[in-house]
Length: 215
Length: 186
Image (cartoon, rainbow over all chains, first blue to last red; front, side):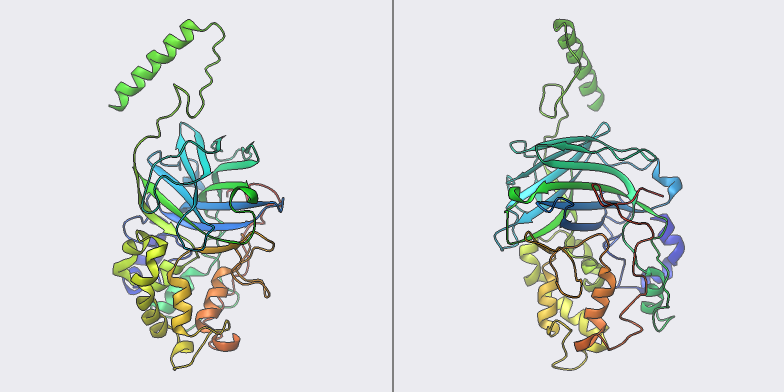
């Protein structure tokens, strides 16, 4: 996040009191710039349309020079939450935790307890993949229909955040055309998991969100 | 403690290897020499739809928003969202103003305050593609412009044109057609 502070300056940070930073990059003081800082969340139909893909990105705005030494924090769990009964309470979770160069995925499986505290649930599907190192081809593991990836990727997010900050800071009246993608040329640490829709409800609409939780 | 645990693990592995002529050092996630995942993990950050905390939560409440379960977010935050929306956008300055989804400020912020992503299991998944609305989020979706249009664009996306599109419409790298879908890093 040092890059961002450099670009924006402290004054703009103070002025941008509530239009802060998108999509979720460094959105809140407690997690800003840390290993549990979620930058983005995606959920979409897979290449195999019987599957749904979940993507969680953390540790945004990595320069190419900083990406090789970036790593997942072994004390941080990334947890995908799935509500398939319409009450915005998770019925299923997919938990991802790194250990010694591998990412361990647990689920989809019913959580032990819902809400703000989690324990690892080992009774459901388990998928283990080698964390892809910077500069290597992506390592993908598919086990019992679940595919998993973890490692550095290009940040898929795009936004002229600098101009936005200028608007909110009162030094510009609108966006430029064309705009400039503030996130161009930067990387994130990505966790991608693709699961059969049949494992998460099969049909209808789910409500889903991602959480970072630390020990 | 960590060092002690490591030493113990090494000793255990040695013993197992000594007693097993064809040991291949394989260790599954729940095996006797597998990683220890015990303990309680406590919420730090969360996210459903893009930029919601960023845009609608006042600066002193951002950590609280991240540690409020979605089922409790509407009661705790809808009023704040509505105040911030009407303060920010001229498109919601007058009573009766709506966005292009026909939502007034209360209805729009009532949707957004519960920060979950609605995803269809039955077909197209997109934040908005001109036809489908809020059926997921793909990598290529121009979510910021969609949100700017819903915040600033008024009833027909025509209001405040210099605020309702950042004119960055695509990522700086092409996405992959197959898993893991995201482009290789720079």
